[in-house]
Length: 253
Image 1 (cartoon, one colour):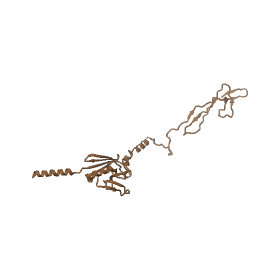
Image 2 (cartoon, rainbow, N blue to C red):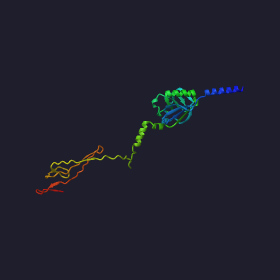
Image 3 (cartoon, rainbow, N blue to C red):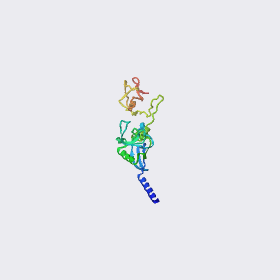
Image 4 (tube, rainbow, N blue to C red):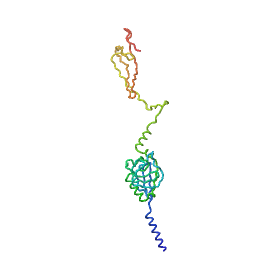
């Protein structure tokens, strides 16, 4: 009799072990927009997801799934399709498939966790097999961190960090930090035409130059940048000669 009872107990334990349900642990990393699915502690799947945007943040925490619908439609957002929906909060947050697979990896949903239709179907079958009440969903991270890690946002942030901070004067006007381009002085070209001109640059009076005289007064020319289009002249008067009487010749001063 005793041996019979022991054998019966062993059969019951074997039957119980054969029908025991595995524990499904779903982990959602919102920083990296990625889902990991483990069965009895062994990772089985790793998929990209799309969680809620900053205005509709998917809540963090650990939840137990409690309801499944293979063909659900959102009553809040214009009957939007939510295929293979697995609900984990009483407020309506669920894991479900999406037709916007191109946006996976970016937090753009209204709070749910989106998967591709194919992956949502696999997850639904797994949870259905092992029990909806035997499945947990754990969420961590932030949609803002995920958005900051997007390539376009990283480039814009890096450019903003490289740009110098604006400086304002006491009146609140922006101060230009870049130095203004200075005009480049071109060496003056002296034209010796055999005459002596007044020091003021006018040619109303001119006199024939004596033999051996070389004209030494010229007007430098300037080339300005496009930003500083202004005229500047610098006269550099040199020695000039002026007649003295009829027979006095020339004098320099």
